[in-house]
Image (cartoon, rainbow, N blue to C red; front, side):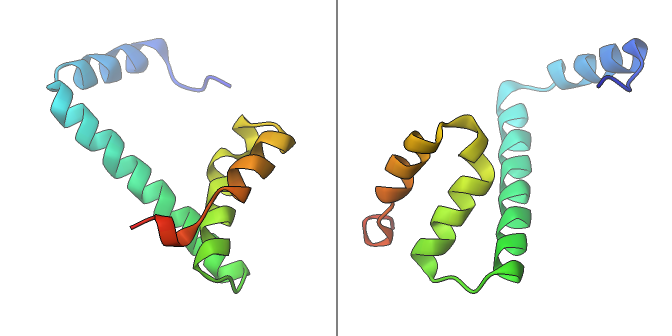
Length: 85
């Protein structure tokens, strides 16, 4: 779906490209962090999970559509909370 006028898209792109790469990277990082916090909030609100289950649920929420069911099982099976600092 495209609901933005081409003129606005061009202006937005010009604004983004006028920023230095480090600033664009910071923006992306903040957006990712915000999305992660929203996803975690929704998961915590809906379910009572321990830390490892929470990491698995977060992975599936954020990346589950990017992998096959078998790949998700392998990845989730490899999540070990003790190995993550």
